[in-house]
Length: 559
Image 1 (cartoon, rainbow, N blue to C red):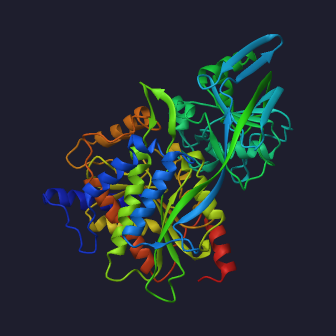
Image 2 (cartoon, rainbow, N blue to C red; image 1 turned 135 degrees about the vertical axis):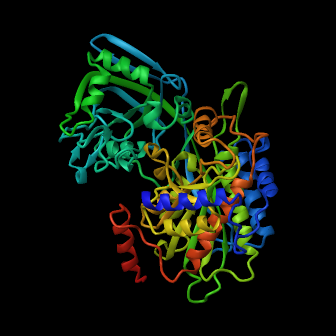
Image 3 (cartoon, rainbow, N blue to C red; image 1 turned 60 degrees about the vertical axis):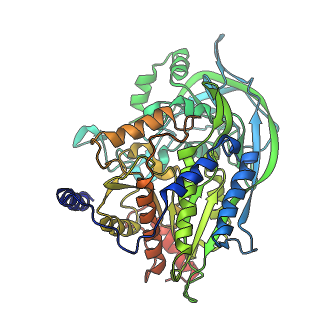
């Protein structure tokens, strides 16, 4: 990988010395920066109320995307002749007056909802109670046989509330003890074991009554304000079952976690260090947790919006390349400086704008690609990738005949970059398609600069990837043309700290859509090339999704 990036870097340097960029091939489509900005302006306006599922904002958003698809004469993507795939959701709103009570031998700590902890349930029940559930610290809460790692060591966790650390254990590299071991949990990069979704799932599977994660900004990848946004109404797929889930799932702030361990007579930092060792044993805290709240429930049919360009080859048009971009955001929430509308301009009105204009570029071709192209704007990504999960588990077209998924989430609005980042670089042969398109733009392909945040598991391509479909999750470059080397990284850090999942994610006067245009032209080229390829792209050897893909293709008689 390093050699590959270096070679591309040399090409970029040559282009700079020549004082010109390699011109676009005629194959790249025209995409209008002003039209992109207009889409974002509409979708992120206060009128759309933050685009929450089941809200006025959903109705306006779905109608807007559907009208765009109709006006460009994109074919309905559903086999019933509709642009809509209904996604049955259950919304549960917990009582915000709840408190979490921690007790040991007459000593009590009462934690306040949102400021100290956030909790919810994925069980579709009207009332939830934990009554003096024993707390058990299970380190990072991971069972990974391939790494000879087991944080549970046979402990019976039924009826207990598990306290876990977020992310993966930072196992020291034997050759360089100051760095994480690249052979265990991906080294610096977060593995799926580090994701909070995995931790809640394994706790529920083991019969735990509750699972509480300790929030720390760096390993979580976002500040506590983002966790506060997990409060309020939360959606689940209505097709899900109550079994295999803990009664309570949630987060506790770092300061309150330290208070909890102090109440238990233990030192948080000492136990955290022990949790990074294979020999770690679960630690009973001899503290109980109690919480009770009622849920307000509503059932809705939210919607994925699906459009299609039908392939030109009669023998291949029942095979697909999929583009995804979630339309939802957080809706109306807790006020920040008096503003309660979480507009979600970058996250993800920008991705929807990109999806619409990439689709338009395909409709303008003199002849479509050999295979069909599907455009899915998904619901409820912010609730746990629910719209993408629903499609992947109820596909309109077989996943075994889906060649690739290209996801667009939070596109570049700050100008052209010399690089394009691939989150999950090295996973699949889709990398080579991106490298080819990037070279034609005079750009380089680079790996995720923040692998510890686990972005590959945090967006709508992932439900497809875990079912074996090669999935591309491109991200914005950070080497901005005409800017200092530090500029791009500072943009990322500032956005995460100040705008991510906040009302301030809105259009700014310093936006420059030229970078988004180049990225979308690249995504378009990748999709077209895959749709015209003579074989399916494959996962690279050793990738966690390769075996499932091969088994499903074999079962379907593909290739």
